[in-house]
Length: 354
Image (cartoon, rainbow, N blue to C red; front, side, top):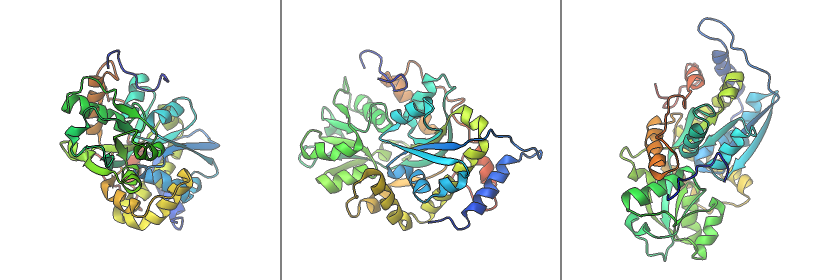
């Protein structure tokens, strides 16, 4: 297992006007209140990582529409699609990507492994949007029925994996979590059809896809297990070095990100055809009819990374033995670029924390 993957202790198209928007946003970032220009090292290529998930819609659409490429020009855009967060974090630490969309769990693990020096959360992307679904003949009707059943999560140590392990241990009193099976999202449907898994803790649209393709039933939405009925599902991250050396590039990327957040908040279903086409290009498989329509109602798009999620999940990772001590979050968040962009007269910020 990679050193950047959580390990357990033994025993446990909108291009018209967009250039002007980005120019204004970047201009605000490049000049400080004192009138001095913020310097930035030249960059020939910007590498962005994300998932073929609904919760990464800003990344998916920013790439598919050409807006990221337009914003960072003349630098070239290079993208990489991941199945889940731990592998994206490995790529970030290995210098294979510069900016990524990921869940809180892997971001916390990366923060701990690097002793607070390796990763920065620079924006939120989405909250909620996780289903717990059961195979139609599994006998699972309630969350209590999950005890001892074979439950699929996207990857060991990813955000859904941590949530599932926490629930089984803290709420159902399981002594071990050997029934949690890390299985790539794209493989879960076939395994559920063959009776090899009983349930899945799945982000959208994969949860709705299991329902449509296998006849799985929805047992619960994960948000209902959180006291506030809200938790961070996807965030935007980079490294401290990239943020320091290329603040203008970060501003350009977040300008596109924020524009898509605003569109998705204002009229999400308008963008479903474009999103469906983009996800098809990434996965090679068309989503069943109605899946995106259903899934998007469960996801809240927001620029707010919801820091309280990290406090809670940080405690979970410690309790589960993923980390040796509770998470220290003092240096994890750097929302400075996001807050500068908020001042743009061309675009209002969407739920940016103060």
